[in-house]
Amino acid sequence: MTGIWNPEVWNSVGVVGLVVLMALLLLLSLQRGWIVLGIHHREVVGGRDREIAARDRAIDALTSRGEKLDETIAIQAKTIADKNAVEDVATKILTALHDRQAS
Image (cartoon, rainbow, N blue to C red; front, side, top):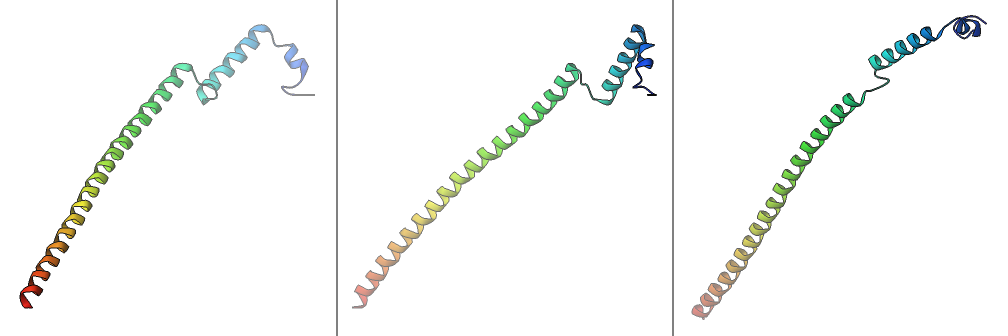
């Protein structure tokens, strides 16, 4: 057996060599992002939380605006319906008066 998996190679490595190897592996994993420090993780998650909160506020603002528009549209529809009813009654009264005068 040759290479890094050979037990004779690892037998010749001392404690200091193993510690240095583990330190290099730790630095490599931090550099490549395999391991993320808690400080950095909290910063990234906090940024995402602020972004989500801003989007939620925008959605809430648009929702409340939509509710106000719905109320306005309902009031306008009711006003138009009432106006049409008044116009229909006025038209019928005037028609009846006109018919009565004609006869």
